[in-house]
Image 1 (spheres, one colour):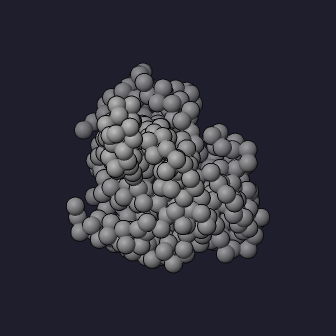
Image 2: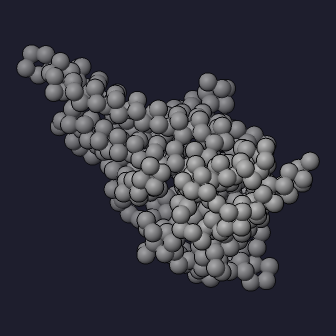
Image 3: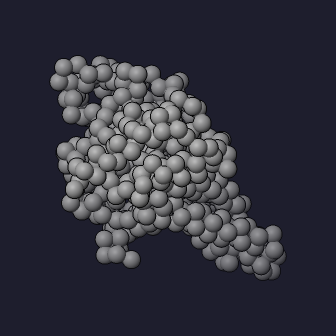
Length: 364
Length: 79
């Protein structure tokens, strides 16, 4: 393990610890926690050292994401968004834009990425948000929904239509015309700051428009989602790890009918399946991250595969963990109950199970 | 490596068919929504170039001929 990864893990363990349940019930993460993790470079740890980041490889960042995901799904969601914003700026932006924005993301400012709209969920081609040039400015109008971290964000990377093509633009939430409204009581990752972001003729300098405006929407969206999928997949490994540990610990310590639950074969089967689910998801994530670190074009489909396998395994594994714990885990605030809700959300975001299967079928 | 030949190999692997040098890759409906990013990552790895910012315009990736020109331009700029 590199020094940077070791220090980041230690900081996460110290600052997040076992507080996730409390934050989940409150529906809020402490802002100073996010600022501190952000300024330590932990929330977008693949950003190069020269831009203020930790310069972790995808695999190292994945291990950090799994660690964070095992402790707190909401904080992991913030890291996924921040990392995705940093990656979009890196992938699509010019050298000058990377120099301008990345140090802000590794300096404590928080960022969201905005795709979804009321009429554009899985079908992002239906996006209606308009981005247009107006002299030295860019004007952005539209409505984005279910924007993770939206309620905390200083910056939002907004995707929209630009002429005949598409574009991504960095919009400060402090800009005139930006209205952020928190989504209350989401099913999972309740403290991740999901929000609706309304953009009413928001004017930002033209150098906030990333790279070549008027690009293919699929290139823009796939670029962003590839990072998001790898990150979510690793987060699901964390969910599985915490569920496997909680279920195994409970099954070994609770005795029923004269022997530990773990010695009842039907319960033992759940433990075996949890271990298999975690290990398979981990291998898929390692493969995607290796493709990323090697610069292989296989990365794109590997990210879909990892996300799909890890999310479905996490949803099934969390349900098994709740089953093993029985009434002990069937209450709001218990880590496996939280994992159960969080994992279901993972089957919906960054490409639903159904969209992932369509993409995988295309690669078959 | 011969850029056009390398590209043909990559495209055949990804799309299961061969392509004429001036044929529009994106007008055919054959390539998937994931293809554009796969192509960019392939070019960066295979030819040691960085495709960034303005160069990511989709018009630079429409045909084998245009992609070949882009790679040569990026290689020349880097040397």
